[in-house]
Image (cartoon, rainbow, N blue to C red):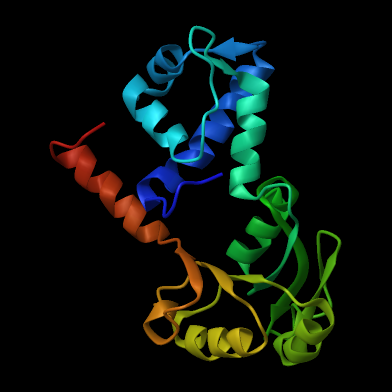
Length: 212
């Protein structure tokens, strides 16, 4: 159980803990101390204990953490046991790659629909899902009630599409556009993904003094 409001920096470390503990479990680890985990992850034992203490007591003094149990508890905190219905808007190259290569079921979501405006794409299958016209989104949302949406569309289309989705009950966005959804809708949940920004940071670190 979490203890009040958790900082975003702690939340952003949770998926890394979850992924790393999965690798440890696959490698045969049964238990691990905060010191050992810190050494392997490049963190400090104090940081790890502080992060975990935000959600309760997980380890035992003198024993450390049970790797499988800790990973399961972090998965529960992240809500990965849930399967929130999600739609993908934009079935171009990026959208198709996301639909094909992201394991939504392991990350708390179920991809239930894909939509586009391109008549050449509509009606084709991406995986086991048939791409529908964006004109069908109202009816689809009424019937399937998606909680989240992935936006892989041009920035100039993002405002209109996000407004429509929010009016249909969508509460969260995995946003690959450069449009700031929260400017008009401060109450929705948005995880912005700027691939170009990330590459620019890599350029800076390659050419400057940067924390590794």
